Image (cartoon, rainbow, N blue to C red):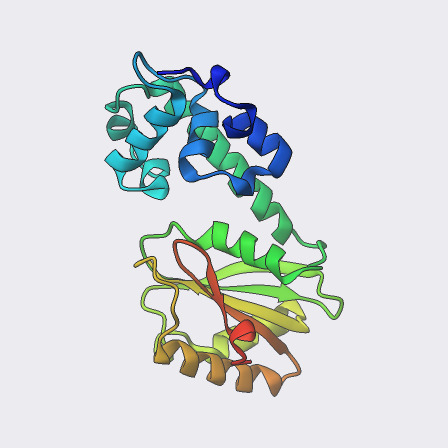
Length: 225
């Protein structure tokens, strides 16, 4: 077994990341860079593949509790602490894009930030990103928890909060704890009701994002708004 340092340069994860960007790497290669070293008889990439197989994917590995994580050969408490620090830095990075006064220049920025905020909840959360006329952030608020449908989201409360915030536009969002982001018919009906109510008070509904494991479904991109 050749150590990674003796692989062809074009196949080494670190060099590929530097030359082609992190998005060009597989989950195993990204994890191998984090792990840095392997164990006797296995390179860091081999160990990363074993970890992904044992935990059934990258996300379950990242969310694994400390005891379960540390039971995997080649991991341990030091790696667990490092990983939690990396995850928290990522959360704070995306959350900073929702700070009051920040301008949303690109829809993907809001999508990434909202996805990071809502993805890991084990229950449904309905949230609103409030924006001014220049699409600068006025605030981000998680308004309701529980089953998200037309009956459980008081539309009057949403409208009242928008008026209190003096919002000119909103992006509404909620998560699907199942991990499947595909909107339901109830989601679509709720969106129509909210859009109609908000338009009466001069607030534009820019998007409704349904958050799942791998990303968000955008009502705007689907042509439903």
